[in-house]
Length: 311
Image 1 (cartoon, rainbow, N blue to C red):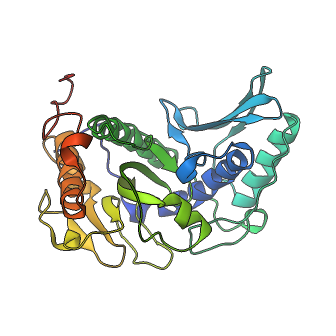
Image 2 (image 1 turned 30 degrees about the vertical axis):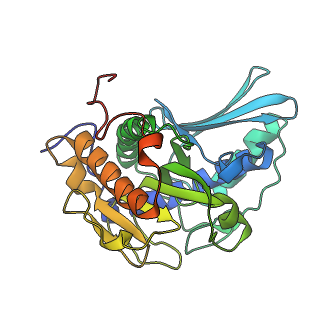
């Protein structure tokens, strides 16, 4: 079954655009990072999904700066709170050209970000000013991505609303190019991973869910299709072999996550219910094995309210 809000996005057909857009988004994300006040777990870093696309907003030299990827008009739009606006058409262009145009836009707005001009969490780390081999931009595929992000964002918000413990916003990490939402047990992580970034991100126990378009994961396996994922940090014993729903979900030892193909969800009779069932079953599989206080942390009885109803 096909659903207009859940379009197909075959990795093999849009990967050139994906690889280019990933770097475009990282450039803007790094601009935000250079000005955003610190937040725990790196929550100052992500962008958010909007009706138009992806956006970030940060204080900047006594003003507010927002930059939006408008995937409806196919423009990059920068606003400042002193009523100044700059725009850039999103079209096929090299990463080097996009980087130069963004820096010029910001100069016109009297914004001078200090960013490290090198992509992260990708296998090809050619610096942005030197990257002339990523240059694709397929408007139809970008619009499909936007529709997917809007649909997934809605479901992730429902999942977040069923939890009354500490939870992240639903946010888009430009490093890995994934939309994610995370629940916390409230307890410190007894085995945080090494490294400044990872140690802060996983300073406390988490169970996280997200949508990722697939592709190459640095140091991990290549995933040939868009997927939903679920993981726990630290991972409790028995999680990888726990029964979860639907049966099409499987555990990836290379990534340390349960993966559910996006194509299975988008063609299901009720994609929202299937995705929520995957999120709830993987959450419970991890939380029960890690000894979380499910009764205290749940805002609703098991299963939560039905879609479209408050309770």
